[in-house]
Image 1 (cartoon, rainbow, N blue to C red):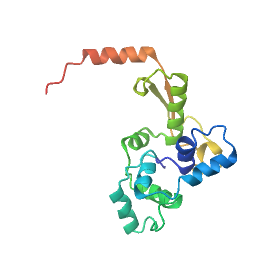
Image 2: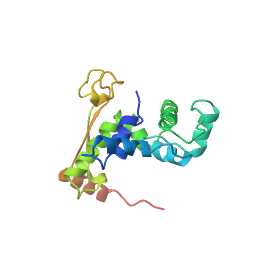
Image 3: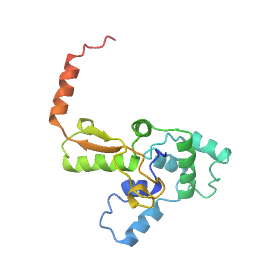
Length: 182
């Protein structure tokens, strides 16, 4: 299973998020403008995709031949090769590790959180309750909801809800804990 955010999900959630009703030409121009990028730009793309990329680590992947040498800057193909190598090596950010541990599809997870933010803009992310439904449903291969490369949906379904009772219970629990000694 993959736990890095796919190219399609990254483009939709990060590069095109402000172009909801954009004309196709604007979408193409926005995607083209992202590349080529620098080594630092590649790192900035890989981290939101759930991968613990650093400039040194990416240079090592090029040295090892796992990523083609980006002679004219980092293009989408180079970043995708680095994504595959880092995902296979489980080099993840804390968010990527969370997705792996909870068996969450990173794209669905981010969409669920963004939907909760839209519904409750006054609520902090940490105040949402995460509800998980393991292997809640399946999509056939090729369905646009699973990028066509996951086959059946092997991930848990993530839903974020604003639950005041949950927040109150959490507040009471933390109030009962003794203060830590330093």
